[in-house]
Image 1 (cartoon, rainbow, N blue to C red):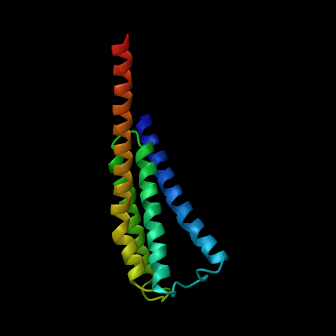
Image 2: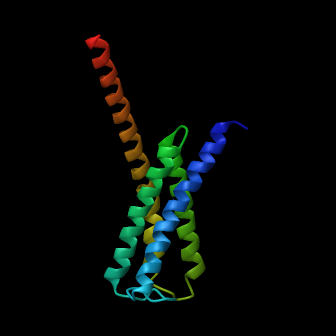
Image 3: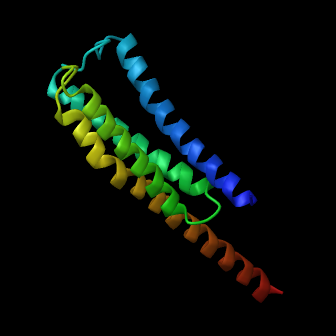
Length: 147
């Protein structure tokens, strides 16, 4: 096995850890301060939208992290983590469909937004990387022309 495979696995794991850590950490804090209830998700619709918003932002951050750490194909790594998030959200929707822990549109919305959010984070990382490379090249050409 080459080192690239291990770097890909590490990048993937880091993206998942960051996404889950931020999501569940925020959930925990909101439960401790009493904003979200403990075992149900029947709350005002705007609270659910807020949760969807911060989880989508955290998915973008996870996509950014995995793409930044990936040894190659950064956006592909971000899309892979987005596919995993979509599958997980669909699985959560199926598992809780008849349990009545919250509205059905919540996990479905997460499933729909997971892939575009991680793609955006991966694409943002790629664009920043290209910009850094262009800046480094400009700096090198300045030093070269000054000599």
